[in-house]
Amino acid sequence: MSYQGKTSVNNIFMTGATGVMGARLLLEMLRTTDAMVYCLSRAKSAADAAERINALVDVYDTVQDSKDQRWRIVPVLGNLIEPQFGLAEDVYQELTESTDIVYHCAANVSLIASFKKLKPTNVDAVATMVEFCLCGQIPLIFVSSFSVIGDDLYHDVTMLETELDRGQNFPDLNYERSKFEAETLIHNASERGLNWAIVRPGNIWGDSQTGAYPLFETKVKGIYYEIIKTLVETGLTYTSEENFDISPVDYVSQATLFVGLNIHQTNHQTYHLTSRAPITYNQLVQGVRNKGYRIDEVPSEDYFSAIKDTRIMRDGKVYRSMFTDFAGMLMNEFEDLDLTEKGRWDTSAITGLLAGTFVQYPDFDQTIMNRYLDYCEQRGWINSVASQGPQAEILSQDDDDDEDYFIGQR
Image (cartoon, rainbow, N blue to C red; front, top):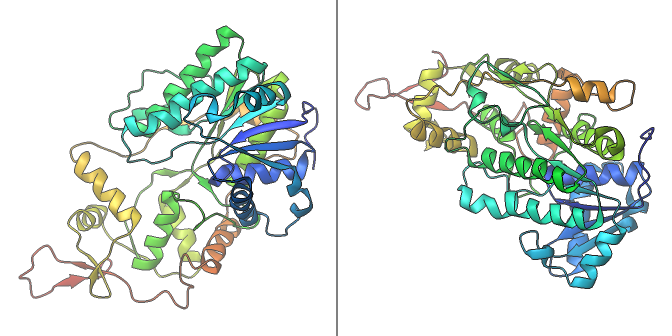
């Protein structure tokens, strides 16, 4: 595969190489470019950094076809949140002079952290990267998030790729706010001569061809994989016709690389790397059922009430997962608000840019779902269909009731 019309690059500087998306993007760089890739790392030594980076690339490189290209990965020891990334002056200057393009993927992706905690990595470090790029007249490709839609997520609107500030607010949406502020900062730097392009990935899932995803190798897991785990472990679900974005990591990475290597065409543009035809949550659950897993529907009000009151029981114990904890926190914090997701994202610009290229969004179907589930089973994230185990029970709200439990829809 090749990126026709691509900008010639010899040296790439990237951050976030050990993240969910960054590692797959790095693999794509090794497979489709000849560039040296300089990866900022907080590791204590170059050897430790290389080991960590290679471990993440290995997750995605299931056929090990990048092994003979790994020599092009050059760890750069530093810290994203320090001035000039904590680099010695001569190292910093050499990087600004030799780098052809920057891919800034690193972020604190916690959905529950305070804005104060998120700001150093998600906003201040972007300002530092802007200065780096301006110093060397280097194009910046910034990985943002479709969550910059803010609370418009809960309104019946479509966010355009040309939009940033559409009047949305960020009440207790700290991660979302941090990405919005970072984008604003980059836009403002245009007046100082910054060349940039922004991509806004959706919910990043595994590789659509292999199912591969770093289920255990990163600190923060995608909440959607926690949903899959909870579905399989409890055998219970609520019902919802809400759209459920699935953005395969191979598509997101290939599209991001393409955007950067065609910066002459994409300069000062933003692209939504989201599903062009989102499925619903109910369709996602049906995909898990189609694989053979037993999952019963519970009225949504009963399901979320049971989560809030910790009344879901499995093997005689209260069942908890990252998903149930997160859902419980949302219910406690936004008890009186309608959090039904109604927002949509236009993808006209990215569709036009990629038309006629090998980079295309893979239409989500049962084949891809099976790849994801098979991979989760192989890695021990979920049990197999045959070993799914007993279904969870929901404890009655009336502890004195003779019927202590009900299962599914009874």
